[in-house]
Image 1: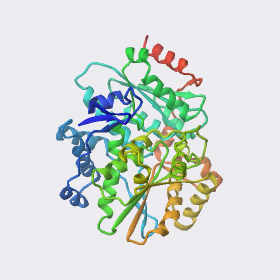
Image 2 (image 1 turned 180 degrees about the horizontal axis):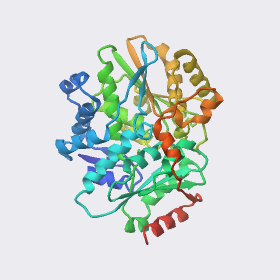
Image 3 (image 1 turned 90 degrees about the vertical axis):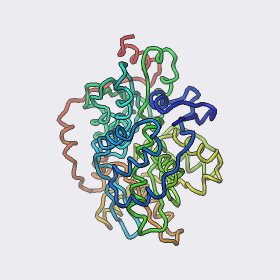
Image 4 (image 1 turned 90 degrees about the horizontal axis):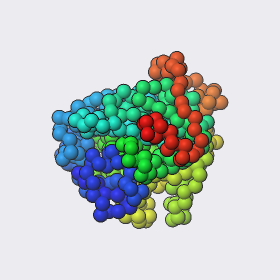
Length: 435
């Protein structure tokens, strides 16, 4: 498997290099040179297979030249050891619950798979890896729990001060051991900028083996393809067409779905639902892509003003907005609309949507009437509602907390407070790594 940079299609690196380098020096993102096609007969057998079995089929289609079948199966069986239930809201509208992993968010798929891929490559090497992660909410928790106590790897997670929920912060700050939480006095975009700047700093890279576990890393996207395939397998007998509605911040989750489609997964349409950080919806309206500082919303994990993975999506469509519009649309919603959607679904369906998932529900309501065929609408539920208690207190909705939340509340928190300064961040990394 070879990969190129979205900024230079003539670049060619192997999968291991892409995993550990994470970000090409030219500031593009790695993409497979060839997207192999999923075998049609194999796909037809998926209705008789489990999620880990389908995950193996998808991953092995991509990685069969890189990792043996035996090792890849072991990685997947260990990483994807939780379910992704499909909840029916109505006859044709479903919620795909992706929050049943350790951190209660869909990013457990990426974090756990990536940690085991890295451990696989490091098992015969004697070097230390430093992972840098910027999080707007859920990525950090998934990475922290995915990499906790993994030999040869330490993790520094940057998160914006005052802009993650209390439970999200607990997931970042109560681990200790090889996991460090750094609270930045700024926005998620500031955290992401500091991480990207570190990857491009010659002095840091001369002393520390840096990589990322954000969705800019290609090994994070591969496991996010699994549940798109698994859902298609469960619904293909009853519906002619599938539409996936994905709450989108950095656009990694929906990029993974589009990669799966490019490999042959039959999907009629993808809908990227955003909050008030509507950079991509505005791009589709105007044809002009304009990044801007993010604004804080109830759906805080999507508070992204410069969605990194959107360049991967554009690259798959040769930067042709008209071609992209045939497969992807993007819609945005305000906090008031999000709260109203949560209240409506709770009243009518006795089902609780997290603020992110609520944007997906709103998108379904907006587009559903335009389709006449036998179409299934699948809303990706990206986080457990318990991670956003303030929202549900205001709406007088009681949330039952999973047991792991109560366990976290008993632990001591550890975090490093830091200005929004690359010089400070760089100095901290050098001192921490004894340089």
